Length: 462
Image 1 (cartoon, rainbow, N blue to C red):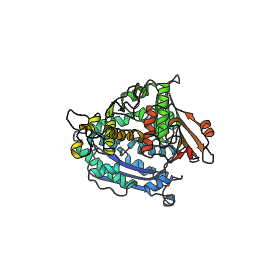
Image 2: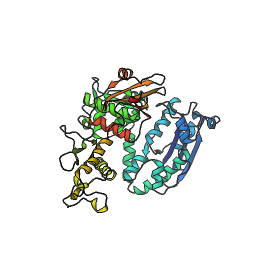
Image 3: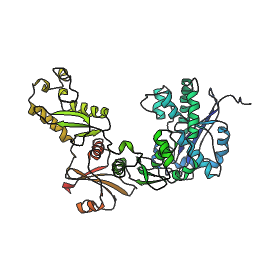
Image 4: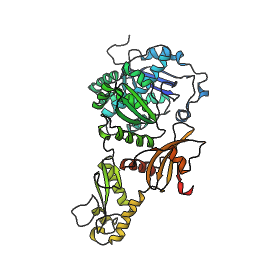
């Protein structure tokens, strides 16, 4: 007979078809029953989901429909899953996902599958802080744990077993694990929220949380709306608890891509000023780099954004602003003494390594130096005065556009692939206007700099 005093864990990984929330099916499942020391039972199988596998999932996992034709259907493996998980705490890397998928499959069979759950992502963040990534592959490699068959259920589950061993060793008092099991148990979505969650998409967009009077209490954006709202409803942060007390319903608008979601989120928050959006009510980008053109040498100054000034670029925090300023110093051979990095020394810290041309000592003519500072400002201009930034739309047959007119952001819109939008009249008729401000400019510059778009159209050439 099994020793009842030993903690028992069912370490799980599932691969799915992808697709809309609650429409996914399991394509592969692996479960290792683990007593804290050794694996005492195991189960691994492909599963025929009786539905299409999304192309990106096929590329990621290597599992395709042909491989699953003769695989058992979920109802044929359900009894084995119940047996191997019975009396155990379900452990997974992103347990919220795996647990939900398994529950969904059982729900289709009319069975209510329930067990306590423990997430190795959350536990790793507590016990192994400051690692570059908590994605399973990168995390276990950073710990010297080999991983094979990445994105296959058996390979990922075995890697999670080894990771869990490390976590158990680090948590010798068992305090954090106990706490996390309790928290995750509480994190299960309350019945009153189930309908809200079930009706949300897993796509990119902006969502609006409403109270019983229909008022908007919070606006957010996400690449996965359902996952983000679920976080609000299961988290124990102060803001999440306020949301949980006030929320009655959720509405949303799909955007198609992250750039439009960010632009729309900022615009909607400033327009509506929901009471729980404290951080974004006034300014999303709090720090700026300002160009001071007072003679003789122009200066680049980092400071908290003030309404009366114009800024070359704005940033979420001082660290980001300093990083950008250091990049400009290197790229344009600028002098540190004529920036916020100025010191009491006679010459700049870059002069001694021949990276400064001597503006700090008056060796370089101010006209030559100021021309390079102007080049920094010019580099921040849009590539074309009149242009469209084309990216993904809300469906496969649709594209989105962002409209820049005479160097000023006008707004965005959508068009079907078989429609033409190259005339100004057509563009402006489809346009959804958004205010041009420092925040929108910062978002657009970031996406342009990182080339996170599909195409640029110079309207001067049309």
